[in-house]
Image 1 (cartoon, rainbow, N blue to C red):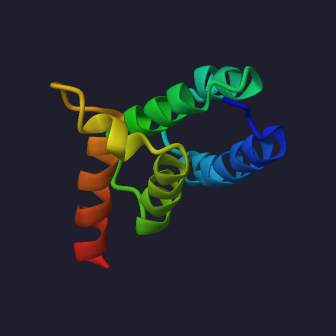
Image 2 (cartoon, helix red, strand yellow):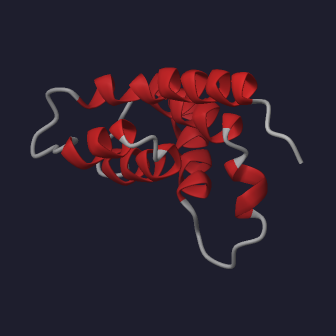
Amino acid sequence: MTVDREALHSSWNRTRGHLDARAHLAGQPDTDLAATLEFLEHNELEVAVDCLVDVGDDFDLPLAFWQHLDRAAREMRLYSDALHKPHLTAADLCRRHLAAASERE
């Protein structure tokens, strides 16, 4: 199977754009995004999503934060992967927060 490198890089760039959701965490107390930034630097985008969902889980963040993470998860097809895992994934938590934030707004 051949990989369309241009399409892959475009997907990575779209995902990186969605992971700018971390800007919503600026100014939150006791928030360390060093691990997230390191994962982004090494193109470990799924792990970066996991970190942002984990950090965001502790705060009442706006709908926009969860929408960005939702788009990143969709771009990486994390929701379809979550169907095959017996445990709660970051994508599952993102969906829950997205729903709750949508109800508040």
